[in-house]
Amino acid sequence: MTLFANILVVLVAILHAGFLALEMFFWDHPFGRKRFKMTPEYSKASASLAANQGLYNGFLAAGLVWGLVTGDASIKIFFLVCVVIAGIFGGLTARRTILYVQALPGLLALLAVYFS
Image (cartoon, rainbow, N blue to C red):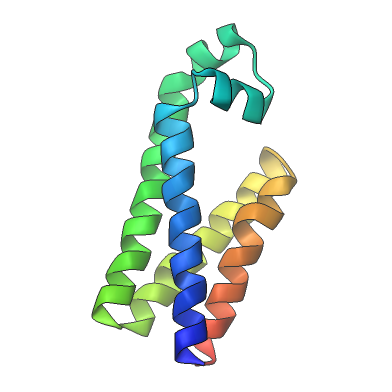
């Protein structure tokens, strides 16, 4: 069960590294604008906010990697709880799909780590 839990944690960390890249580096580019259905004007105006958000996603990914490297379940649990809370908040305030893309994978990994 621990191997399965760690695989889920790796997947959540990869997701958040991807969010970092999208929000920090591709927000004001055609790929980011298409992904979030933004106009060039909106993506340019909101790029610094998105970069800040991307940095936080990078911290979540780094924390999950830290937990994996040390093997400390409490570190993984802490960062997975942060992922789930951020996903729920984003799903309720920004886009409902965030619940499925961020909160659900985080919750599944959290349950797997907790019960392993």
